[in-house]
Length: 385
Ligand SMILES: [Zn+2]
Ligand SMILES: [Zn+2]
Image 1 (spheres, rainbow, N blue to C red):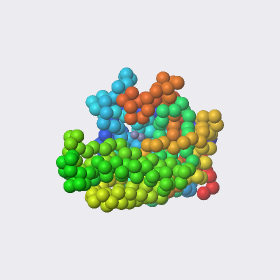
Image 2: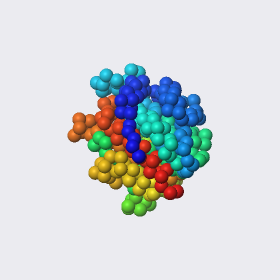
Image 3: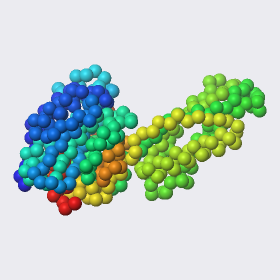
């Protein structure tokens, strides 16, 4: 099957979207641009929410349904690159590469639309709003039913790795991050009369020590989990026992069972230590996204498709990221795989990670990503399901 990517349009779309970034849940211009182009390509276009777009491409013959996902939102930060197409919106920047994701999926849609006669099955193109802001756009789209007839879902994320390379994690591709604050309520007193108070600093210190056992004693040694106490604030004067102590916590885990275990152990230890000292406590938890866990068969298919599209030497099995992604809202419902695409690294003059004000990608990686997406659709629809 002969096909290619419209590279000129692809680069143009990416630059245009990059210059006009929009914050989560406000992707008005971007989603209108996407919807218009998908219509031009001849796809059926839905707008499940105000700023999201789903395009459907039905092949000439019936078959399975593959969903390809791109996210479209930008971050509340000031861009510091020197590009001519840098952000025209003060304080808003595409620093996570979602401009690239959107443009690549548009290019893949254009190519696949041209191959409609040779497709057996359906391609669902999900252009998602609000990845960067929990609860995120993905969970909203799932509840709108975008996965109802989908058999598998794939997504790409540009990363600070060699341009045009693909790395795929076996198992967890990203972590779940839950965080929040713990307030320990003690009882203040004069520093010379500790017997009249309940010292929240002593209780807090003991809590911090106890929390070090959550991962080391409750999670299997071959599993990824991190408990971090990122802040500990209490008191002001050397001779006063304060009333309260406030701790900031973040909990990272790579699967749902460990996520529950870590939260439960943290709460049990805090309850136990506080009870032992006559202190009370309050948690303010903020739940983050679930971990993205790649399905084995979907990951194998993705590896093969990427190798076909880019050459075997460009594709490797690699680690997941410690960051978190709402792609999990899809991949926890249907088999899925989340691939990492190199946008360029330090050796290519791009030392900055995602979410850095100088984050950037090499444009050659755009074509690579779009090629992988087209190949994924072709391979998935041609495989006997
Ligand atoms: Zn991001
Ligand atoms: Zn991102």
